[in-house]
Length: 293
Ligand SMILES: Cc1cc2nc3c(=O)[nH]c(=O)nc-3n(C[C@H](O)[C@H](O)[C@H](O)COP(=O)(O)OP(=O)(O)OC[C@H]3O[C@@H](n4cnc5c(N)ncnc54)[C@H](O)[C@@H]3O)c2cc1C
Image 1 (spheres, rainbow, N blue to C red):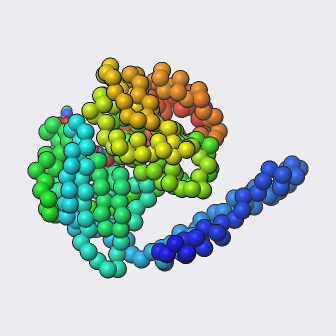
Image 2: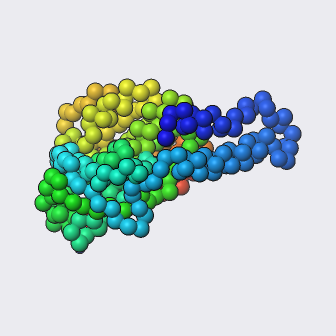
Image 3: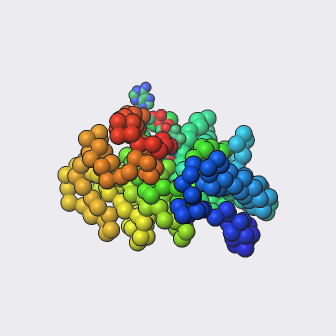
């Protein structure tokens, strides 16, 4: 899609009324209700137009598509970056939205993974290698140029620009893979007024992937990042706050004091136990908007 066609679609977005446009007489429909309706119609039209302009997606929801391994690089202790490339096809490109995941099939096993970056032809993943993990064992043996198969993308998380004052991301371990692309897309959007605060739990600094990428994100005015490390040690990443704290209930409770329960979106991604505890905190604190990925 050309930048002009993209800009044209964006410029058709219904203008958000200001507080002064509302007379305060509880009209039915209120100017804000009308705006919501117009916005919904515009979103629907925009999605149709995008699909028309962008061409076919190489990925399929129902069929595994062939990819080859382009690189395997150590990301942190027990984690690799895996970059894969699709088989060239003039008509097709890769389309994903931040936070979506795909199924990767290797030998006879198939597991979900969340792309951290991608372009028209390539996808990069952050993958934790478990001792005796079924897929992990396949990834450990994987060679450059070897074939693997992917279907997707899945996940219906939709983020709309400027709907929140803050997006707070709470993740542990490889949960960072789900929230990192969302943080990047918000920070790189020049029309965003929303601030992103990321809180990530890891065992130690050697378990932290994407260090350089996180440092780069801290150059954006609206990004702040705190690493919560379980093991006590001196560690630093320029621009990133590092604390020796366990990202668990009481600490999460205290973090949430700084945010409004109406205007904050909370994204949660970790183990089932972490997700459960964090959800309980959000319910207790009456936060209105929280999502698990
Ligand atoms: C939507 C989604 C997105 C995901 N995205 C990512 C991602 O981006 N990156 C990522 O790294 N992971 C991601 N995951 C997790 C991923 O799909 C796999 O579950 C993970 O990689 C482990 O798979 P495995 O086959 O290697 O390990 P498994 O075989 O599932 O084993 C995992 C661990 O459990 C242990 N284990 C297995 N069975 C038992 C048992 N019976 N008793 C005790 N221990 C046992 C194994 O020894 C191993 O240490 C995602 C999961 C979901 C649901």
